[in-house]
Each structure stands twice: as structure tokens, then as C-alpha cells.
Image (cartoon, rainbow, N blue to C red; front, side):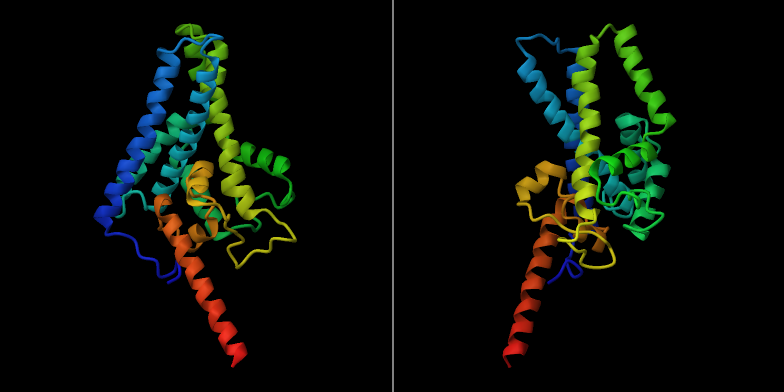
Length: 264
């Protein structure tokens, strides 16, 4: 059974699972942000805890974006296009003032032109350079709307509410910026960068990381299983490990069949 034959739960079950996980991720993300900004008081004595909180918030920020990514493909709540759009619109705006339609359209273009000219996620001039590609990626997506949003939020927190700037940077700015790096590295650069020693398997110009399920979850909510995602964009993030296992089984079966044919 390959990921092409991999079957998902019934739509109702898939929607319940997706919505429950989205609520946990987004709820944790919003809860930590509220606590970090409006309750927590940063000091030298609690700095280690603050750093830990920032790390968790960075990971949850990645998760929030992955939830929105599922909404772009309609796999968050199958058959509920308007609900998918509504959830992602709110979360993307809170994440960094992003516009839902702009990101959705860009992502579908990425799937159509993966690794080719016109792919908004790809830097055709620097297909092997992490730093230059990331800078191109950042400039394309972090536009004036996001810049105004972030500056407005920071201004209110600092000048109106009196939250120390160091606390804002550590617990709001750093998790947001680092999550963009995490998303880019594990979800764009590693799967799509050009490397002579790592050729692409097919026209999708994507590869899959060999991470364990836990490592895959911690790095990018299974977005490192990227070839499976490009083969089956309808598979939600939480089902990608099963899709990957199905592909591995299929590859093993095909390899065994070839060996038998050669031996015969």
C-alpha cells in the first residue's frame, strides 16, 4: 500500500481530529502569549523558564502555521471550505498580520510549480543557499501589512501597556522570527533545495526526511515528510507519518519484486 492508496478516516472523524488538535495548538499558543505578555514578569531569576517558554511558543507557532496550511488544502475540516478559511484567516492574522487569500494562492502556486520558475517558495537564483533563499522567502511573504501589524502590536505592548521591550523581544518577537526559520528550514529548504548527492524522486522536486515520528513532530509537525505531502495534499499533518510508512512498505515491496525478477 503506497501513500497513493493510503486511506484517511471518514470526513467527520478527520474533521473532529483536526479541529481538536488545532484547538490544542492554537489554544496553547494564545494562552502562552497572553501569560507571557500580561501576567509574567521577566527577571534574572526566572530567565531560564522564560527561555523555555519562548522555545515552546516557537514550536507552537510552527504548529499554528501548519494548521493554517491544512486549511489551505481543505484537510483541516474536509468539505467545510468557509470554516477552514475562517479559522486560517484569524490565525494567520494573529500570527503576523498575514492575509489568508494571499498565502493560500501562493501555496497552491507552489504545488503547481514546485522547484521551478514562478514557485513563490523557491529561489531559482540560489537553490542551494540557505541564507540567500531564506532572505528571498522572507521578503516575499513578510510585506507591509505584516510590518504594520507587528509594529502596531509592539507599540501598544511597550508604549501603552508598559511591557518591557526585552520581554516583548524574548517572548513575542523571538518565537515569531525563529518559527519562520524553523518552518523554512524543515518545510521548504530541506525538502526542496538542490543537492547533487540528494536527487529528487520525481516531478514534485521534493524529498522526505528520514526522521522518527517524534523527531518529525518536534521539528515541523511532520512537514518534513514532504514528498508524501506533495503526493497527497489532502492528507492532514497528523496523518503524514502513516502515509510515509505506507510509502516505505510499497518501496520495499517493489524492491523485493525487482530482485525476484532479476533472480528469475
